Image (cartoon, rainbow, N blue to C red; front, side):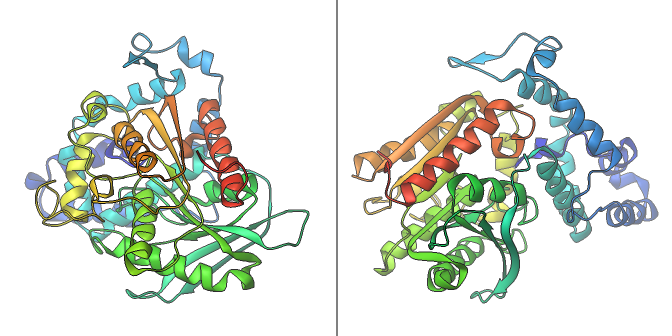
Length: 409
């Protein structure tokens, strides 16, 4: 999950107590906590579930009907939408911790050991609940030159019958610009490559607060330009290079397109956006409806904005077209775009509004709302049937659109 709620349940009770009373426990205990952070990290790759993780995966692999019979409250129906019972069960388990997170999160994230520990836990959780798909023809890690330094990328080439050049998708993970990695979205990128029949270039862009905006967008643009220039050597078609991303990664992808238009350069062939960060959604109806207890909480937005966009987190405080694409002066000229939103998500309305603006300005667009799902549904494809369907459906649609077949409309 790309929110504060995504780490609830991961902290042992002793660490919760230590963090919540850090002012009174003394320097030695504080040091002990950070030493524990460092030695509690289990490398995300090669991913092997611990016994506890395997137990959680087996538990949530049970049928949705099992969870529907064991909900704490009535089935949740909001704004004409019904939440998937398995996701409702998950949300119910995390909500008791959500009230503490605004107090705990800054304490964890204020130090390098805390950030490393938290990012590792998020990576492993995302890997755990994402479906494993078929093998790749090849997977390769490398670094490319970027204006801010080396950029790690991972290149996925699927098994296909033909040796003809394939379309390319330059993909950017979510995580609020502060979490996640190439490792966390490894299974997602394999799924996209297999189902779309494209080469996927996964981008390990720099994270905040160490590297605030526009670092992520700079790295994304540099990776896109590299992928297009080097597509033939990857077995790809330079005329069919698209961009995509989920959540914060969607914002990076949109920025890439905007920058090419502003510079007068050819843009990507197509764009794939999962529950994208299209701007500042604080005034949206969905922000009010789903701001507490559905994975991506408003408290998380409040936490990340000043760290990602220092000095510009207020919608009226120097925010430009790139920070807030939804309210950009123009979106004309963007490529055919796929937008997939989740019903129980504070970004639901901004995703729909972005698609509507694209359509109004003549951009071919295909918008799909999955009303029973929450934010970050890509990371639940192994355990939530509708999340699996949504992931596969949108990947296949991208494969058609980037090839010019069944263009988004």
